[in-house]
Amino acid sequence: MKKIIPIFFAADENYVPFLGVNLVSMKKYASPEYEYKIHVLYTGELAENAEKIKEMQTENVTVEFNDISDKAAQIQSVMRCRDYYTSAIYFRLFIPDLFPQYDKAIYLDCDTVLLDDVAKLYSVDIGRNYIGAVADQAVAAIGPFRDYVKNALDVEAEKYFNSGVIVLNLVELRKIGFYQTFYGILDSYDFTVAPDQDCLNLICKDKVYYYGAEWNRMPTGGADEDMPKLVHYNLAMKPWHYDGVLFEEYFWDYAKQTPFYDFIVAQKKAFTPEMAECDRVGGEKLIALAQSEANNPDNYIRTMRKKADK
Image (cartoon, rainbow, N blue to C red):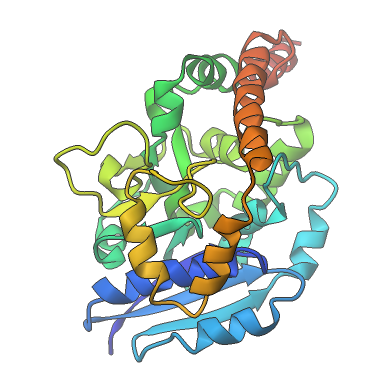
């Protein structure tokens, strides 16, 4: 019997086409030794896009769509979203409780493509750490973000991880009541910079196994000698919006092999200079927001310390 590699995505109808791009890349490097069991967590309607994804399955790379509308409704009051983010960023917090058959699982954002077998990521022994992840390159490179994670979350910039590519130790997360802990933190403070990612970093602090940057390589800086194993088109760095995005050739090579290629090309054609300006302004506002929270005397970590001192 083949070993199962559980892989989770969270998607709405707009992001299913990009899930399809990842699926092509995953199939390219999938080993016949494993069964890649993909779970797509969603709410609402996915219509014909879900059927197109189903048609992309192979014998050992299969896809199951899991409607978690009822669970998502339970956290509606504490969910915080900004810019283009949706409630899907919170879906991963349900994985430990909803899928008791798994002891370990991978979670990937849809805006990622693989350049190696994802089973290699899964197979690394992360010990009793809660999570395996990659330090966030964007945070480490930008001063206000570094200040924010240090002064608002009490996490060193070099240890603050990106939550778009993570390996979850479901056994250990169940022991700490992951869902209840996550909910409690969300309910205690209005996180406005990166709500889901900040909470994960708070919960998993000092219980993180760090993978090399090649497993969550963002298109920042220049191409280096180290070949990425996974590319993450994070924040506004989307090849379906902009020309000249680092590693865009991989995305388009895979996109051409999906039934969504015409849709993705249309998305790029429809992306206007006004939308690009919104991205630019949004990026500046996010950096300013991070600096403001870093300086805020009532930010999360300072508020928690005040409560502890009472």
